[in-house]
Structure formats: structure tokens, C-alpha cells
Image (tube, rainbow, N blue to C red; front, side, top):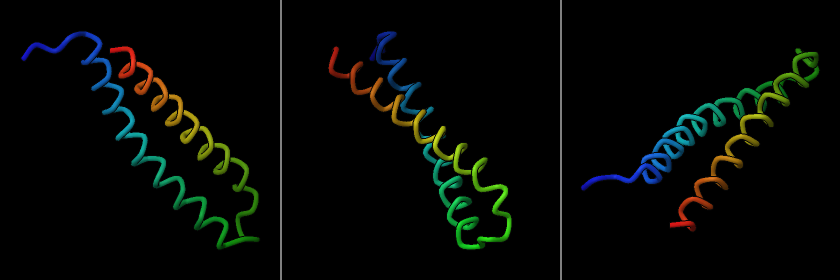
Length: 73
């Protein structure tokens, strides 16, 4: 079966989403561990929280993009 360029792009996005999901899960655990250890390392909280937010934001954007591409078929 020959894949169209659009279906290849969707598959590439889904692969990227899988990788980001793994990283996001790790960031979530890191944030949780940091929160449990408060007030120790409180100075790291904003950086870790921002990084976690950024990953989840990117994941959301990619998922929306895939959904739009799939609906456009």
C-alpha cells in the first residue's frame, strides 16, 4: 500500500506525540517528586513547572493538528 504524503505526515506526528508523551510523563513525575520534597529545592519549582507546561502544551497542539489532518481526509 502506498502512503500519501499527508498520511506519512500524520504518522510522523503520531510518532512525535509518542516520544513527547514519554517525556511528559517523566516531567510529571519529576514535578510531583519536587512538590513532595518542598520546601527543599523550592527554587527549582518554577523551572520544572514551566518545562512541564511547555511539553504538555506542545502535546496538545500536536494532537489537535493530527485531529484536523485526519478530519481533512
